[in-house]
Image 1 (cartoon, rainbow, N blue to C red):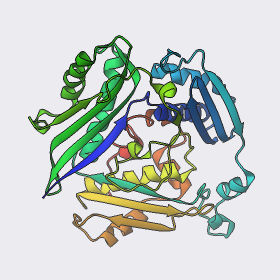
Image 2 (cartoon, one colour; image 1 turned 45 degrees about the horizontal axis):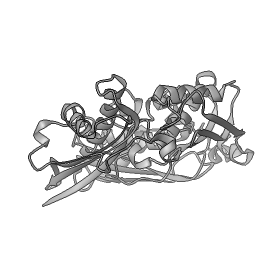
Image 3 (tube, rainbow, N blue to C red; image 1 turned 30 degrees about the vertical axis):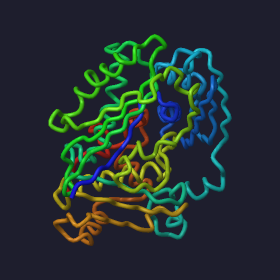
Length: 380
């Protein structure tokens, strides 16, 4: 049986990803000075303006405006006429402290208040988080999102290294993979939309993208004479970034996770410190799902955790191996509960999440990067 599945990724200059990067840059700036900082930083990007809001409780002294301008500069936005200029854009900061109603549940968990002594804060909110892994790629990620991220990253590389010197930071990639009997066999379609300078020749752009972006990334045995390429299918793409479209933190949650191949709990990651289980528990769920596959317990694994605000332990753990398991799923759940402390404090300590690591996660997916602690392979 043949079927097609599509995933997308975006470059670091996409307006939403610009906002994610700014929010994570603010988070890292606070964690660098105060490992216990409570941060929920939201960014909105519009025409010539960056608006920062949210809640931060910390002993750190951070120049948020300078962090914002540095982040925009790192991405490469320098032209107010076609996207945004880090030097001249208006930066508005509207930050308050964490609500005391939330803090009272996070600071001390319900279990500790009732004498169970789990030694952890409570979860910062209710919610459900998913982790996923499969054996389609060496990093144990689905092939469509893996290829989409690699293409988006390559698009940024050829711009920054001036291999293709007329590109601008904004861009999107989409990859459609053909599956046969649940196995990926070929790439059916590749879509690339990239911002460019006014003088760029569109015929040359299409050729450059195929030769210098697609072919160095996508294995040749996955491409054939029937593979379709749509390069800047609308034609001109000069106006981009926040001038072309507004941006908002947390609006690329499918790009950040598994490209739609696995379910998503709805919670965004960027700008949130690790007491927010939207982020930390999703990282832990990925870590465990990856190790279920890496340890040979299944070829494909999805894990769900659910939490209640103020309660440290998850209220439920769900495992689905899609019939690929080599041991009973009940045994996998038992292994998880025996091996891992799934309280917020347990996850934070196990994965080392109080360090300023989050700017490294923002772009090209939060999963599948071998330098991140939740991607480590263990035996359990």
